[in-house]
Length: 161
Length: 323
Image 1: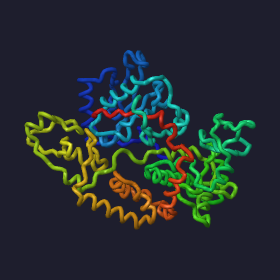
Image 2: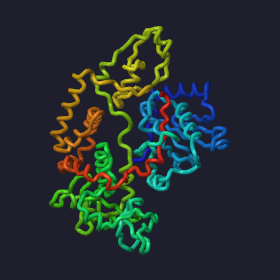
Image 3: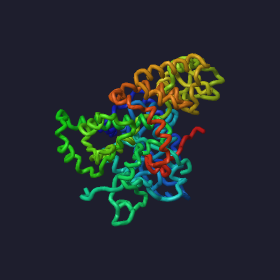
Image 4: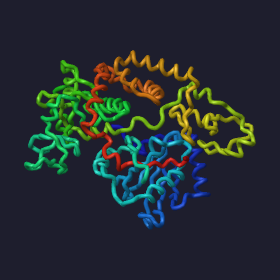
C-alpha cells in the first residue's frame, strides 16, 4: 500500500521554493487574523496555530494545523491536517483529516496557505455543533496505514458548514 | 470473528451479519435495515452491495475497477514471489486480524462469465471463497477493499487538450494590464511591463510557465475555474471523438457504455485515455457486457442507497474563495 507520509516526499522544486518564500513574506506582512505561523527552518512543513474565532463554538480554543507541501506546489495541493487533538467538527476527523474541497479536488494554484487558513477558520466558525463526522471511526481506522487525506476520495455535499 | 454464520445483510454495516436474538435487527449495529442473504440472492438480479448501481457517473464504475485492480495487485505483491493457489489458507491467517469479510457480488461491476473463469480468478488471486455456489464471494479483507475503493485516483477537472492550450493567446503586458492584475495568480510574482503573458478566455492572465503546467492537468482557470472552451465545432471536438473511437476498438463494448455520458464526457474521455496505461491490467476483464449491465443498472435503481463513500451528507465543505 502506498503511503504518502511527508517524510518520504520529495524536496521542493525551485518553483515551489520561490512561491513559498513569497508566501512566507506575505504572511509576515499580512498574517490572516486568528493564525500564527510557528517559525521553523523547514519551508516544506508549516505548523500554524489556529485560534477559534470569538463568538463561535471554538472561541478561546487553540489548535494546530500542519501543512506539508509537495514537490510541485502549487500545481498540487498541500496536505493540510490538524495535529491531534483536532477540533470537534462535523467535517474534521479525529486523526486530524479535514473534509474540505479546496484541499483536494477543488484545489487551485491561485490559492495560498493564507487562503486555506481563512477557509478552515470559516468552516470552523459556521459549525452548528461540536461533533465528529458520523463515519469518523471507520474512516480513521481505514487510515491506519498512514494514508494521507489527499489519497481519500472525498465526497463533498454539504456547502453550509 | 464470530463463530455463527451470517444470515443477513445489514445495509447500515454493509456486511453480512447475524441477527440479534430473534429480532430482525443487526447484531452489530442494532439497525433494522437488514435483509436475508438467501432472499437477496434469490432475487436473481445484480446485487449492489457497494451501491454502484446508483452512481450516475460512470467514472465511479471505472473507479471501482481501478480500486479492484489495485487491490488485486496489492494482494499479489503482498505475497512476494510465493503467489500460489495453495497459499490461500496461509494468507487468510495473515489477514486474520482484519476480521470483516468481503462480499463480492457476482454481477458487479461486470457479469461473471458463465464458465466461472473469473470466479477462479477471484478465488485464487484474492483468497475469496464462493458461498452456496451462488453469485457472491466472501473472504477476508473487506476493510482493505473499502480502503482501496475510497482512494482518490482523480482530482479536480480533467486536462485541457493541448490544442486548446496552444491556442490560448499570448499578450504583451501593458500599463493597463498592470493596473488590473499586477501579479501572476500562480507564482505571485509581479508582471513586468513589456513581458509576455497568456490570457485565458475569462481574461485572467498568467505567465505561460505558470498556467500551462496547470492546464495540462486541469482545464480550469485557477482564479475563476472557467474552462478553455472547445474551439468552434472543429478541431477540439473532432480530435476528442476520434480518440473516443480508438478507445471503443480497444475496449470493446465497454466503451459504448461510456457513450451514455453526456456534457463533460468528451473531456473526461480525454482524461481517461491518458490513463489507459494504468487500467491496462484490467483490459482482459473488460469484454463482459458492460453495456448490458448498464441497462440493468437502471432497472435495479432503488434497490439500495448505499455508496462506497458512505454517510455523504455529513461530509464536505465548499471553501472556494474566488466566487
